[in-house]
Amino acid sequence: MAMPVYSSKFYAIIVAAGKSVRYGEQLPKQFQPLLGKPVFEWSLQVFQEIDEIDEMVLVLPESDIQSWEEYIYNKYSKVKKVIAGGETRFQSVRNGIQYIKETDSYVLIHDAARAGITKEIITSVIQKVKEAKVVLPLLDIVDTLKQVEGDQVIHTLPRTKIKCAQTPQAFYLPILLDCMEKATDQEISITDEIQLIEKYSQQIVTYVEGSVRNLKITTKEDLEILSKLLSPSKNSIYRSGIGYDIHPFSSGRKLILGGVEIPHPYGLHGHSDADVLCHAIADAILGAAAFGDIGIHFPNTDEKYQDVSSIWILSEVGKMIRQNGFEIVHIDSTLILETPKILPYREQMIQNLSQALSLPSSSISLKATTNETLGAIGRKEGAAAFAIATLRYYD
Image (cartoon, rainbow, N blue to C red; front, side):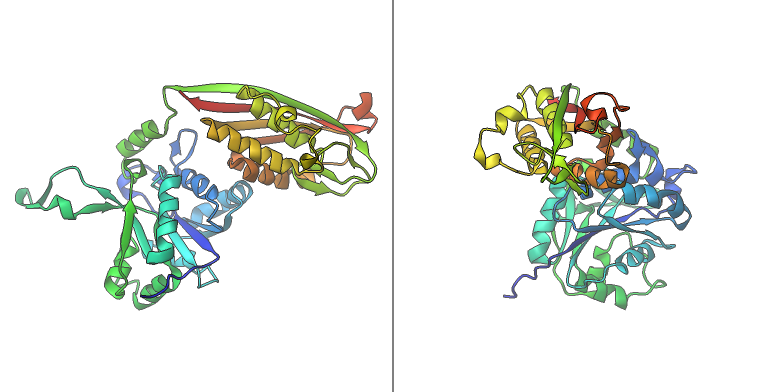
């Protein structure tokens, strides 16, 4: 029995380059608004939050790249390349795969029109492909299937042996590359990449369970259905909390803000690394859940928290919240200090906070201001931070 092949890298190719002819609108379906953001962003957001995914490639129509790529790169750290699609799905996927240089890796190919993709499906596919090498999600068919010719029904198909294919479809990359090299643009008009494996390889294809929520948007009715599926539960409760922290500057300390070490003559004095931004956000989250404050959970009288990273503290708070049924929806924060300037480090801070809280960077607001020379902060004696956290709890 052949041993499973393991790789250190997982890539995801999000295909959003279609013309959406069947959707019937001038604006392609992947750019249609869905609960406040374009359809294709829903997939990016979910894949961004999967730890095993190392890099993503987004395939867009060539005419849309310039207007979207800067926004995408700033918002989704795992998107390393936005690539133009081709005239066919085969060409679009091939363009995306050409970015991948490590052939000893795995690739997940996902239709951006499946905006309801879940972490559970992606994780199942990733775990399965490590051993099986080619995997896709399949969904049971509940309707009776009829074969027709013209306007006549001629046969009933055996439903028990037929399932609906979904994405992401995962491949050990050398297997897929070999099949793509054997195919030609003129020969292949595929609707998914598994068809290449079926035609050009002897590799066994396995599957995991799909989900009704992972439907593909083809018509306006599909978008309406998915909008209802993705809408917050009627039994969800929103709660908000506020956090505040202040620390004085001290010599001989590193200045850490938002998990970023910033060159400065002074750091902030405290039992931990004194990251006021992380402390304020952690307190805001704990406050929204009515779980006290970080002094209760990480007391400065406990030596094990001496000089501990506040990003780690924030990560632990995020885990605590999720384990108790809360979902972090949004963070708004403000740093207050006269010096140094924060703008050069702002994006890295947001990414650090995003990773610590398993929260999309689009859900984190970070601002910075001075105290206009007033008070201790105005005299450059320290730094402070405010934060507001919004949580959702499903009752």
